[in-house]
Length: 141
Image (cartoon, rainbow, N blue to C red; front, side, top):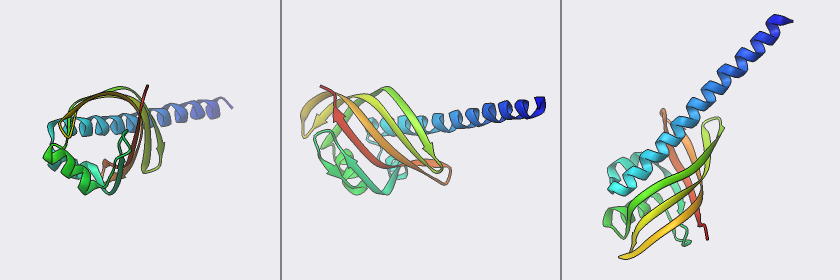
């Protein structure tokens, strides 16, 4: 009986640790994507975005991967800063869902924005890295 309780506790500790590590890797990938968006690094973004990406902005603009890369590359959307305020991660095998809050500043078609957002992002693991499959954000009033 003592050993089964010990094994059960050990399992929960190890599983929790592994899950925390995976959650941290999702958040790290997300931060790298935010950084690449600010730097207009479309080469890095190409690898971070799933080919079937659907990106829904807080103004209801919906973009595919190609459209999103063009918007960032041409500067029609110019992210000057993206600061994550909070986030939580839920894992589902090779899929992850993040929900969080973000402050974003920049320009859309040369018009300034400074918004607080709540967002949901869906990632899939592909060859040991997390790719964004879906993004949807809403302005926080």
